[in-house]
Image (cartoon, rainbow, N blue to C red):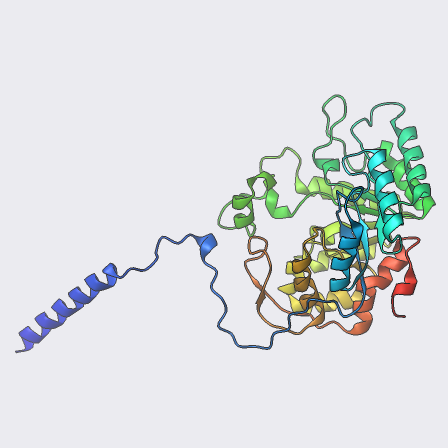
Length: 369
């Protein structure tokens, strides 16, 4: 009887195992498809409008010369965005693009739409380049530009006439940085990309999914290292203490706030903004709240891309105490985030007070004291 029981049990287990193997489970699903909704039941606050009017210091409106800016203002109103800073004043490099951008903004609402100018460094070895750029900068500011935006191409892709990489801290650019200080305008500079873009694209890379979906962002075979580019950027902060620099994207140190704090301590003329890196803050709520409280006078609000529905993530991280909610682009952040629940006095500085202090000629009457 005992032998029969053992045999029957083994037979049943064998059949059950076969049936389990036959179950139509979706085992072919790729990693990037696996994104189950959380079963966690916690309070949720979908903040589609900022608590205070805010200034977005990092936006791009490439069609500003021709677009209907009244439609843009309506979208801004829904978000409680008081002022948008268009960093792409010269578009692809033309003076005409800047002139028409400024003209359209002035015609529509110059108090709410402001423009930064840009600069072309490709002709840096032309003996007349420096004088041309200094005059261009002065002229652009007279026309109404309120800052200079530096694209990541400087230090990464821009080459001189002999095919040599133009360094961010090239001495021939020094008079440009100095002139910005003299004119009282800030330099918002984007240097390099996330450090992971230079690292091996393997299972240990946090940005693996993004780099798989967007292989053009890879820099793991680039001849210049991330550390070199970032060091060049820091050199100009050190060499030009009278010029205010806004280090874009938390300087790519959003995952190392201790190091970012050290940089802010070292360079009193350096500020930063949170464009495209809110996910870094949202996954470390206690450390991020401590950091933003300590450096509340040095951090500005920025988004980077104009996708109105994505602002909710920023508002939710900054304003609420919500727990374990997703980022709006999984390939940027597969982790969940948490609200920082910042106090009003810190929020006001990040949302608008710091920008009003750093960027000239902004209309402060739109904001509470």
